[in-house]
Each structure stands twice: as structure tokens, then as C-alpha cells.
Length: 243
Length: 289
Image 1 (cartoon, one colour):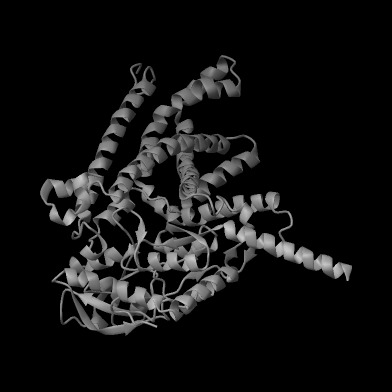
Image 2 (cartoon, rainbow over the protein chains, first blue to last red):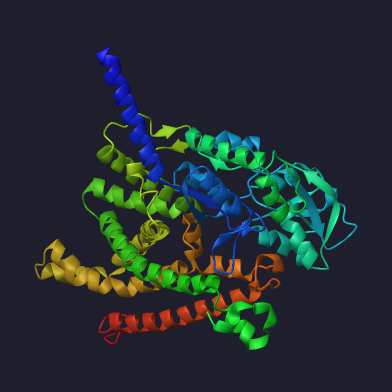
């Protein structure tokens, strides 16, 4: 009896201390900061956008202190698994390849439509030179199309610039990223229908970090339940489907 | 910055430009010039030190030391910078955290490697997760500096190694004839005379180092090229008070001017240095030919 009591006390104490340590630690959120409206740097150089608002709200609901960090897209997963930050929130679609390396939260957007944008209205994207950001689902999709030639760029901005200066015939990227640009520039237009890729956008976690993932999953679920996630989607991603 | 900047859409001309060029983002851009200059100022001497050590080791009479020096030069020179930066920095960071784990969390019972993940107790994290962002940035900067020093040190080692070989044998023989020990010959004859042979190679390295700073962003340190690309990219009115089209060409033009100026200043300094180092030496550059 005595041993059981001691064991229980020790366990309770241990959990209490673990919780206390957990609470005081800051959760670092890694993002790219170059993919409006999901994440971008505002005029003050601060991370802003859909994921900034969503992430801050999720952290508040999960009672965590969060800090935003920008990181190059190409090294965003290696730096997560080596522990430079604790979660990725960078418009990253849930795919099987990524899922082998990291774990994803529940999606916080529906599978997001991608579109082709070009300076020519009649371009045949099946047999064209298509620009995409390296390491994205769009790049993977273009690479798998037989007739099309893929040109990869390190940043989203460069993919659009390649179309403007004629280096590529069209660009394939998330619709939410391309639409504000198309609306602002008369020479660019959407070509063809929406392309549905991936399993929605989710937060990326280290596979060993199941506890943190559960906390954010609970917060995402609570935002889905009370409709606040839909409100954010309607505000930032007007073309995106709600939950 | 200025009082009239509250509504940039109503401004035009110089007033708009003044507001635009003083946004927080632009301030970060200007600050990154300081980051780059600081990195160069600290890395160049450190790399030279690494290079000197490498060259001396590569010439050592004791075989293991010689092997060590030669291996350092050969390996680092043959690995692409970008691979070195992704692999070495992460390995270094994890090595430091592992040492801290052993020291700070003796009762840690989980494996450090869990699949792809590297997991240590939160006390061993370097820097601590709760540390303010600037601590993380300083840490990233130090890692970057160290990595740059190792990479450029290997190239410098090869240059210095060649320079040491280029000092005329007659000079060394004379020193030996005077009864100097090997160490004395090295200190008094070889090192003072080798710089003139090393300088052209070292100045090349310096120029390459000056332009290698975009690698910094791989480590999360934002350098001038990152900010130029970020600021120059087109911005739609939805996401900024200062919408503009693709202005990268102007930002890169500014970088071009900066780099040209830096190159020019470097050239002047190096030329003076060369004059000083060749003074009185039996070379065409020197006076005592």
C-alpha cells in the first residue's frame, strides 16, 4: 500500500514538473515568410498573413507561448527535425513523401486548388514549360506530366517572374497565392481549370513530438467547431473551400 | 518613421519614397549590411588562422599531423559549399546539444535519434527554446562564422601551403648556414617571405567570401541578398501599404554598387599591403631586385 502511495505521489509530482516545464517553454513556429496570403513579411518586417493569425489563435487556445521564425523553404524540414524550431506553418500541403519524414496535424485548409497562370490565354500547359517552386507539390505534379517541362525556382516570387519575362510559359502554384497577383496585373491570366493536389495544408511536427501535435490538433478542432477557422479562411483565402 | 507616413496611399513622389525607404522592412535591410560586414570582419582573420594551421600541419614532419592537415584541405575543398552548410552546421549544432545533454540531463533515457528526429531534453537545447529571437540569431551567426572559417580556411591553407613552398630554397639554406633552428627559420625567414606569394591567392579568397554571404539564409540569418529579393519582389495592395511591381532589378543594382565599392576598397587595401610585404624582397615586385 505504502509503495503504491509513494509511486502515485512520485508520478503525480513527476507529471506536475513535466507540465510546468512544458508550460514555460516557448514553441517556435517556422515559416517561409514569402507566400502571401498564407505567410509573408509585412511592411515592418513582421510575419503576417493567414497562418500568422491562425497560428497565434491556435497557440492562445493551446495555452502556449509561440514565437515566429522565418527559414528558407529548401531547408525548412531539415531544420525542423534537427530541432531549430518545433513546428512548420508555411502553407505546406500534406503529402505522403513529407509524411515519411515529419508528422502533420489535421489539415487547417481543404485540399487547396492550384492554378496555372500565364501571359498567353491559349497555352497548352500539357506541353509547355511550367515554372514551380522547388520541393512543392506543384513541382512534383509538373514533373509527373509527360509533355511538360519543369523549371524550378527557390522562391514563389521567382516562379511568377519567370512567366513575366518569358522564361516559362506558365506557372503552377496555389490559387490563393496567384489570384492577388493576377488581379493586379493585366497581362497575367488564369489558364484552364483548378488542379486539386495534396491533402490540404497542415502544420508539420517532428515525428517524436506527438504531444505537441495533439495539442495543436485539439486547438484546430475547436476552431473548426466554433466556425472561427472558416471565418479566417473567408478573410484570407476567398477562393478556398471552408470546413 | 515620419509623421506623414500614416497614409502612404495619399503620398507621391519623394514623400512616398521617404516613407517607403524607412519601413521596418527596409531598416532590417540596412541592418543586414552591418551583419554582412561584421561576418566578413570576423571570418576573414579566423579563416586565415585556420588556413595557417592547416598549412603548417600539411608541412609537418610528423606523419599523423601531416595526414590531418592534408585531409582537412582535401575534404573541405571537395565538398560543395551548400552541402557543407546544410550538413556541417546541423551536425555541429547537434554535436553541441548532445554534449550538453550528457552534462545537463544525466537521467535522460530516450534515444537521441528517433527516426529522422534529433531529440534532446529541453535544458540541453542550444539556445534554449524560450530564449528571445536575437539569441537564436546570434547563435546562428556564430555557427555561420565558424563554418565559413572552416571552409575558407581550407582554401587558405592550400594557398599558404603553396606560398611556403615558393619561398626560394636559397633563403632557407642561408638561414641554416647561419645556424638557425627549424623553428627559427620558419619564423624569421619562411613566414615573412611567403606572404608575397600568398597574397594574390588570398585576395581571390577574400573576394569569393564577400560574395558567399547568401549562404547565410540557409542558417536563418538574413543577409543583404535575401532582403533585396524580399523587398524587390512585387507586392499587391492587399498585403502592403506600399504596393509596387517587380523592383528586384533596382535592389540588385544597389547591391551591385555596394559590391563594386567593397571590391574597390579591398583592391586598394590589398595593393598597399602587397607593396609593404614585397618591400626589400628579391622579387620583381620588391625594390631589392
